[in-house]
Amino acid sequence: MNNRIFAKSVQVISADGENLGIMPTSAALEMAIEAGMDLVEINANNATPIVKIMDYGKFKYEQKKRASEAKKKQKSIEMKDVWVKPFIEENDLNIKMKKVIEFLGEGNKVKISVMTKGNKKVLARGKDAVPELFARIMQILGDRGTLESKSKPDERTKSIIIAPAK
Image 1 (cartoon, rainbow, N blue to C red):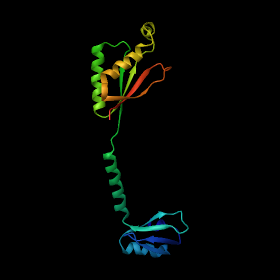
Image 2: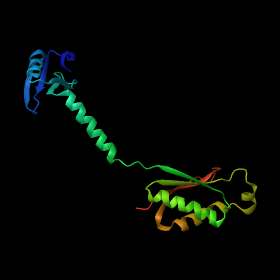
Image 3: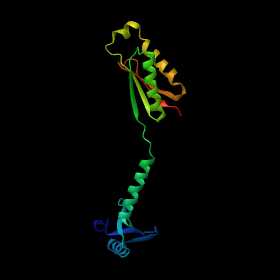
Image 4: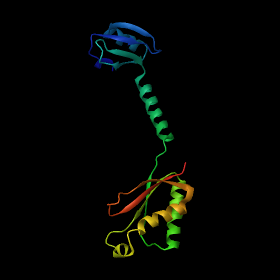
């Protein structure tokens, strides 16, 4: 920018986008100073660097404003965690599912994890307890959420990820 451009000659673009051609850097800098603006290097990779006459402070302000607007319009999706036990009572499961439905209503994804490690009852009652629980959960949720992914069968903590229905 301005005095930090070390090339001997530059291709100049005016403030209104008009190509002024190739000229010495000092002449281009004088033109920018006369216009009350800055000389900003746009592309330094060419044999003759391309510079533009512009109000650099205003340019940076508008760039920051555009980035802030884009950030406002962007909706972040959070991953909410809900933990359940494999042999959870029906009422307790309904309470947890109300919370899951609330999370899905807000547009968040929900990861439902089942605590199985170290629980001998799970092994005694059979390995079908967790898949049956997940089936019950999906039945309760109905069309409010869609199953996005399941944990691998060899993982200790079984989980499913549910996305909001579209």
